[in-house]
View 1 (tube, rainbow, N blue to C red):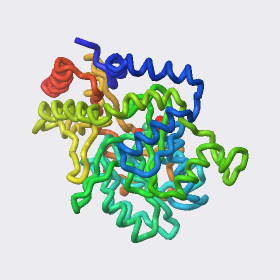
View 2 (tube, rainbow, N blue to C red):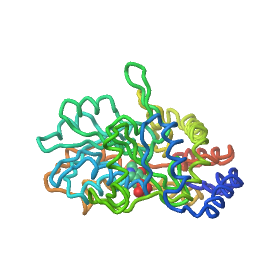
View 3 (tube, rainbow, N blue to C red):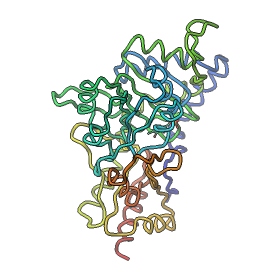
View 4 (cartoon, rainbow, N blue to C red):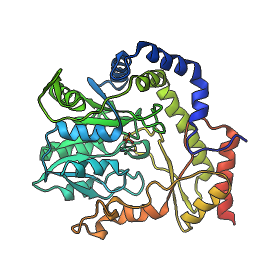
Length: 376
Ligand SMILES: *Cc1c(COP(=O)(O)O)cnc(C)c1O
């Protein structure tokens, strides 16, 4: 059996090797290494795919969030509500900009931000909500957009994990994840669903004025060459990465389908198991399975983690510590009773290998080994 990996980037590369190699070598020949024509082309192609007016490429998904918050002119002390159960980058940039992160609990079944908790967290200082479309499916955007409208708040979608997912509004209209808030961000980190071969990220918006600011801030705050209207950062996408992304973007929907097929295989194998809760998919979102995350009940998740490792099955705990309990992000105002779900999830979740390159033998071995654990 081919060695099982958490994310099998090598097998994916092997299938598109000739196209990738050619695209990268062309950039070497063209010598436009940063923000070159490849970046502009990729930007247009991603705008078309997402049906969004502007894509602003940048250096990584963390910068994308930071640039979005800078462009919205959020000021020190402004409160920004986000999820307690996410990758640290989301809250890191809020804190870096001296805004006040307000962490709230999530839903136990979808792991996405809890709407009642968001409402409860709103104060006169609240300026923005940052929903994270965790593990590959959208947060409840219709409710979030309504709350934002009622309270005059910005919505910044952290879409690092759900690019390609569709949100379905109650009137039946669909929008791509990341294109519903005033601004959306993503990451092209290699293991993300649309990954490049290094760091990369992008920001999305339909707003003309905001797009102009986002572009300028990502390039030192420059409006025209050597004229600086705002303080910016150096955060641009390399042409090599854009060339790779141009090869991979046409495969994104296929990659999402392939992940869904693997998820279905897992779901069927674990259906109705007394110790395993398989992922819940919201009625209002498709799921692109950036992660396939189980909840383990009435059994020892950590033992399962070890057992799988001993059986050569990589697996991961996303995330082992709630953000509100982290040294960097704790706050004496937080009450543990407000984080019942996250406090439980950190002890019960486990993510299985998830990528686009499984063969049936591997999936059978993974599911059988998980099931064997509970028979011990
Ligand atoms: C990966 C990720 C980021 C950061 O992306 P980088 O490109 O690694 O900076 C931000 N938010 C979430 C939810 C992520 O998963």
